[in-house]
Image (cartoon, rainbow, N blue to C red; front, side, top):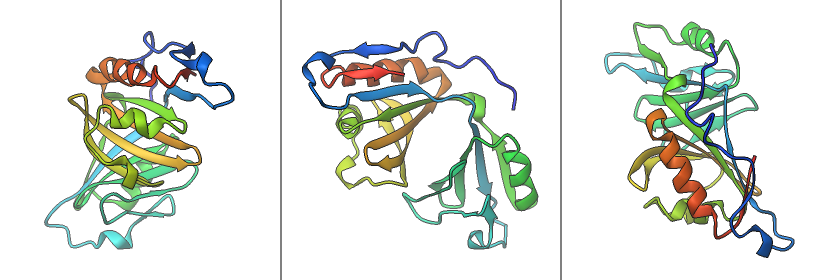
Length: 196
């Protein structure tokens, strides 16, 4: 995987921002850019006779229902639509591993790593930040859930990777990365946040 300049390379700021001084003793929200992840779009063709529940990638089953995610330390598989998954991994050889398990007669495999901006949002108020721009009911959202939605009109994918404290990975198209970053950081000002 060749490393490229990310859409937030010169935008993301480190430090403390917003109402952080009035949050005595409370852990602040943390916002960071996530880099160097492989993002693979996997689609099973309609003509395929293979049962998705028979396939394991990185010892993970393909999730078969919305809003499920299967995960281990290096790889997460997000249900995206029927017969469609997003595979997120820090493993450099993930695409070759996928190609070994999913042949081109039955699956379309596309590396979309450089087409996305990835922002991590962590903290007890993370759901409140997401509620400000997304029409989804985050009170019903749990660890290892994902969704496709919008944030202030921008198309996003949200993956909840932890719940103690709440931790989300938010994906957007690269061209919306800067706007999404500013929307999320603006929504975080009232809580105070740390740019990491």
